[in-house]
Length: 225
Image 1 (cartoon, rainbow, N blue to C red):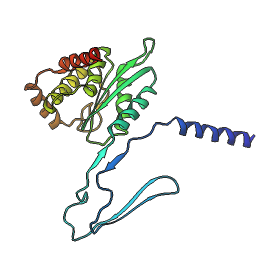
Image 2 (tube, helix red, strand yellow):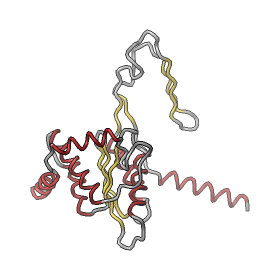
Image 3 (spheres, rainbow, N blue to C red):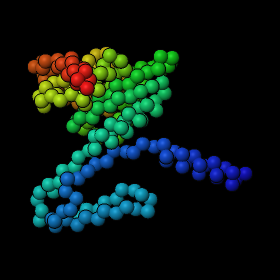
Image 4 (cartoon, rainbow, N blue to C red):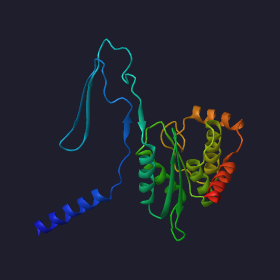
């Protein structure tokens, strides 16, 4: 009986490992440093990430030492969508990851008997578990906004116009859909601090809603194809 139980446990662990999505990775622009730092990077027997850094007291450039670390946004978006689709009652998830925001559109099954705010909170916190802490997460279960989120990743706009389109889409998402509970002390439902909320409000006063324009561009691209 014990052998049978052990066999079942091992089988479940293997299945869990196979079904887990790849987690986001952080890539360094400069893997080989020629400074006075002593860096030890190893893959442990447990397959844990491990690093030990001894800084050079004569080096005054700081801990980052000129290195730039970048989040793999595509892998991150894929992980967030996979985690989100595992939430009860959710049929599909679309995720866009920018340099500091995550926009998630998800569809709830018609026969799902769930609390919209609870579901929004689960989707959001799943995303927060795989992104840097400074990111803000915005969610929507409004089907009409799905195309807005999708076109942010497919539409080519200038940097300024893209920022405006992202801001406009976020505003519509917050107006039409619950955002869950506050992320933490001093932060709102999207992880914004009070100062960030004020700053975003000031920016919105000077912006033009370009989300419909982004949608039109997306449709034109589809028609041309």
